[in-house]
Image (tube, rainbow, N blue to C red; front, side):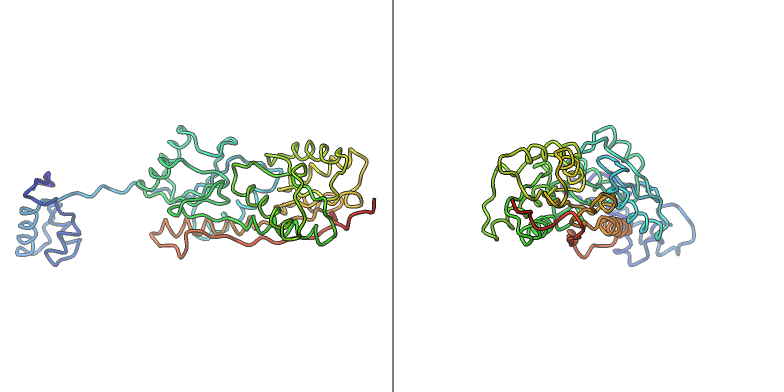
Length: 347
């Protein structure tokens, strides 16, 4: 039997098994038996099916690549000391364990976008789903995953995610607003911010939240108090030292992540000052080390574990062929007040 034939202008495209079954008013399994030469089909039914195939042709559907029973969790880099990755891993693992899926960890060696060689390996592994954390893929790579029917979910996306790719993020703008309002309510007016890379959505949103809080309070933003373009601990030290050396230094500094805030602590100690007696410090993330420093860090809690759970649940649903109620999920942040913030000292 001819499996398929090329369509011509006066002949429609060959039919799939499902389309043949619909025309013959039989089950897909019955058509499959005829196509594969099996005998257990009534003669009149077989004749009817073969006639449809003779008239229209039969198109074999491309076999779906078998997927491994695993979710691949991709980080731009793994920094165990920070706790950021471990919080997300913990959330994802809860979901994969519940669904009896393996969890595979990958990192992009500090890159925000996957390089071609690594991506080729990912496609070869053919996981049930991919969760990219603070990293992503090119448009061509994303399209390739879609064609291979490998679901992709972004967690803490670096840029504005497209509507086609599901994503889970946190309220970075509202977190920046809340952190700055807290300092304003304590009486601070000389409030500095050390921000992350301007290329990253989260850093821009936290800075915008800071600016919005200052604007709402009627406090002009001094451009000299806005520093930084990295989320690295050492940058917190460097920029805080520069801020504290100003003729009119800030009375409070907002580090846009906990790593920067820890760097600010170091800078304050080096200049012989104290937190919060001389300088209030606030961070963002609420990673475990923020509770260990002295005094414990006031910070904005980012629900990283919940973000991991939500991203994994999305990936599993998509792998099972289910539609998502929403493609973009933003989880709330919360201010955690500890001992690093206080009213400004009199000068």
